[in-house]
Image 1 (cartoon, rainbow, N blue to C red):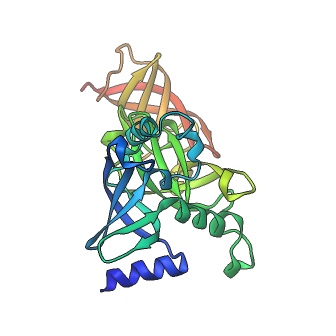
Image 2 (tube, helix red, strand yellow):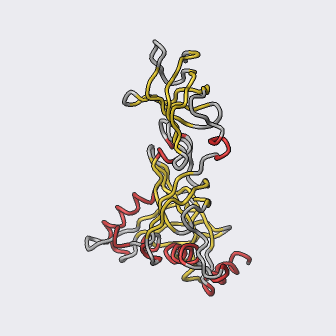
Image 3 (cartoon, rainbow, N blue to C red):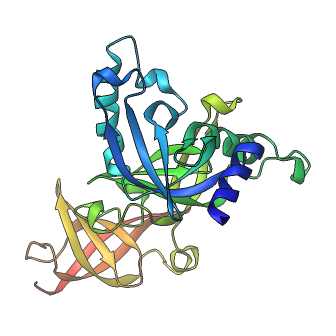
Length: 279
């Protein structure tokens, strides 16, 4: 009964609920226009969300081509989100079926967090510099796709805390949350809001790093004559040169000397002074 009460309240008051995507389904072309839908698990019930209600900018994915073809293409884009939590607002309910809209929930979250908030003197909750949780929707080798209070955005590997990992899929997982810092916000209306975020680094650890000091670490990768080093203190760095006669390889224990650090991007570069131990 509590679940049904939640659904009724959501429909009557536009209150967002949070569920987990368990499947992306496609019907047949004879079922009509809205043939694609996501199944979202909420407590002990399933909620059905048509694919056109999964995003705000439907024109980007659904154009004048065959509706079924558009659903197939869009379903492929959504498949990596299976297992992710999403917010939705119930739009239809009876004893057998519950239908929701993620689009409506995203719009409400955008308005209340980025544009104005009546409980905060009409000042937005989120602005440039805000540190807030981001929900991981999909993970690719070189990029994360996250949702931050109703706005979806990508985070390139270089702006994560695992920038020098071979594959982000080994470090991040759909459904997890990470803390991000908002670097840029564009758009004055909920429909066209865009943001840029970076994953937050450990500020206290970064502050301890000093130019010309040496730190131990492990080589995690080697690309274009640059060596990526995971320092033991918890910071990732790039080595532009190696002064050891031996060439560093992945897994080698090394001594890293800092020559540059950027306070804004938390970027560290330097050189490998010597190899302590080969992998």
